[in-house]
Image (cartoon, rainbow, N blue to C red; front, side, top):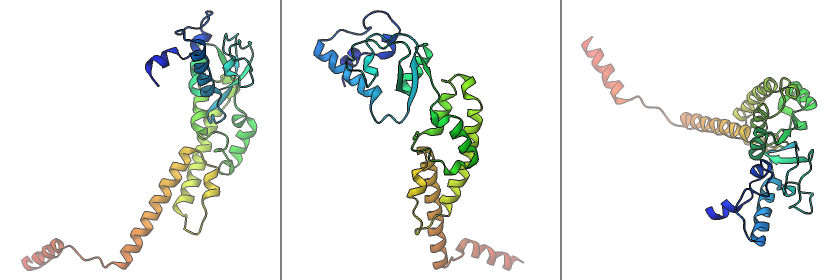
Length: 232
C-alpha cells in the first residue's frame, strides 16, 4: 500500500477526537468508500483473535463502520454502543477516553475458578490464542475494581500449566497423539511444548546412538596417562 493511500485512510481514533467531519485528506467518493471498507475489515473482521468488548463513551461521528451490524457505515455511532475492537485500536481509544473496556467472560469469575481448580484442563487456546498475554494487557485497560486478583491468578495458572505441559512434552513418545493436548494450548504454550518435545527427542536419539557406538578415549588422554606412569 502506498504512503499517499495510507494518508487518505480514515483514522478511527482521530475521528473520535474531533467534532469536525474527518481529520484526513479528502478523496473522491469512490476512493473514500473503498478506504472505509478497508478500515472496517481491519477492525471488524470475523477472525480477530484478540478483539476486546468495549463501550463507546460518546457519539462517534462517521464511525458506524466499526459496527459490523450497521447498514450505513457513514452514520455516527451512538454513545453506549457495544463494540468488539482489536487490542491495537482499543489501547489508543482507552488512552484518549473514548471507550471503556469490559472484562471478557473468559477472564471472569467462572473461568478464574476453573483455572484455580485445574488449570491444565482449561481450553484457553479457543478463547484467546494469546490468553495470558491478553490478560496482562487487560491489567492496564480495565478498571481495577473489576480486575480483582486477575494478575496473580494469571501467574499462578500459567505456572501450573507450564509445569504440566513441559512434563508431558519431555515424556512424549511416538505412540502418543499430542494433538488433543495442543488444542487447548495458547500460542506461547505450543512453542514451549514443541521446544520440550524436540529436546526430549534429541536426547533420546543421542542416548540411542551412544549405546550403539563404542566410545574411544582420546589419544591425548592416553598419552598423558602413559607419560605420568613413566615419570612415576
